[in-house]
Length: 133
Image (cartoon, rainbow, N blue to C red; front, side, top):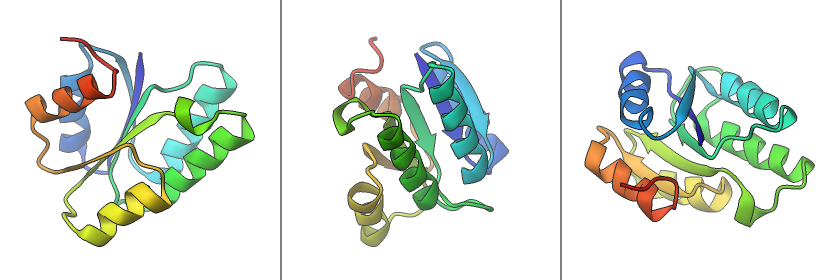
């Protein structure tokens, strides 16, 4: 299992990496531009990510744009919606419009408001079939 953790905040990246590393190999990115680069590289190397934890508010390219680009890369590479990477939005934005945009415009799998609770994210990853406890 492979995960990409995308967040411009060092603490948030490190915390998620600490939670996830017992279950999967984790790469990190500090903005949407780096996330898109890492995702494209993983696809081209035939080592795709199983999970992306993606912040929304970031410099360079925000999470919404990065997610749309990631979904476009999947389509370019023949990955159908059912087999696409699971994307968990991790954000401080607790807002109906942001939630709507993440799910319906971007194709997010799940949405979590920071601060992320370890038990909650592990439970969500179990529901998505990504980990077993």
